[in-house]
Image (cartoon, rainbow, N blue to C red; front, side, top):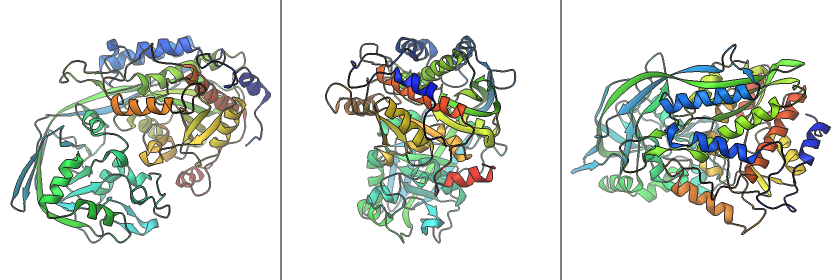
Length: 549
């Protein structure tokens, strides 16, 4: 790893304003244009794109727009002679008349879909009937041999439904010796919990929602898991998954435990301690799912700048173009426009393509601009690319991901989600310092953001990945102004129709500087002949080493 930035890169950053001397609304330099970002965001998040769901007319419009912009930037097709990589998807749309019925212990309870319970199946079947499946509280639902932790110890889960806490014991106890303390591990992610329940042979898996450990309110659960649910096409029709996956709200969970004669809060405390043993509940769950199945295809969009001396080595910039589409059953505005999430990142990808495409001299290494589909459905587009890369993973130097950039003005800092994982942090620190800014670690590691965007798909196959997020310390104005706006967005706009472009309140100046920082990191990587590495002790390092790096 080179200790200093190349002179050409320093020259680019030297043109960026010192945050202490320019107004908040001034663009950092002419490299990235705020007005162009605004134009792309406004277009992609407009009602005419219908929320950019995969395999819809709005999705196809988005793909066409991206190809047009990549061509205008002078990019070559990134997948042979094509700008697209076809991603086969299966779409399951469950009927919403899906109450969760609970019986036993002299109780008969019904939990309403949407209000109390969200359920679905990943199995590619028209009908799923989970009948009188015994409930078992399995704490955090974790099997971690390296931590001597097994929440399923001694259990035969055949035919049973696991009731599971979200996040992991480190967050619950704030004990740094348990897992990674406050920072969520992959064991805390809902994806892992469903995967582990399936490995244990469970028939169902239901996660208890609580806002703080989940990192989002119940409205995000009900909004994200209703309507069409996509998955990659699996040869076995996903029969290895549990029959029913789902969530219950906190009040519903409290009712379940009370009916079982169990103390919910006391059991939560026990579940966060080593040696926890699963607790059978004297209740049975029944739910029927009726699916409409549609097989379809969507597209990753890829544009490439060919390297001059090491064209077989590539740096990837990635952003997901999709969002949640349109819900016709929502009263009033049912279009999930996804302006912040992720028209901003998609616009940034286009602007970076234009910035590199306008350079007089091509970089030494190739650069791939990759707009992926179906991120909102479980990182599916990036997962498909990671399984079917157009450049071998061992020749992929790094991935730089852009997701939900903040339109909140210029900041004195910038966030690295997953800080401490790889040497890419050092690149970001040095580039930010030239801008007069500081790097800060993710302030909310308990929310598991590292596992919630497309960089994670690259990390899982060993590729060092950098995920930058907006800073929170404003150059001008009240010190907590940006934090308040981020909190408001999470509570009222994230994964809701209210995530719309607002030219009156959006300030692109900070976003411009964030994108320029990512430009500088990529340009530096494209001019080097070394590969950044994962830090020692990071699990992805073993995968990278096995890949020949």
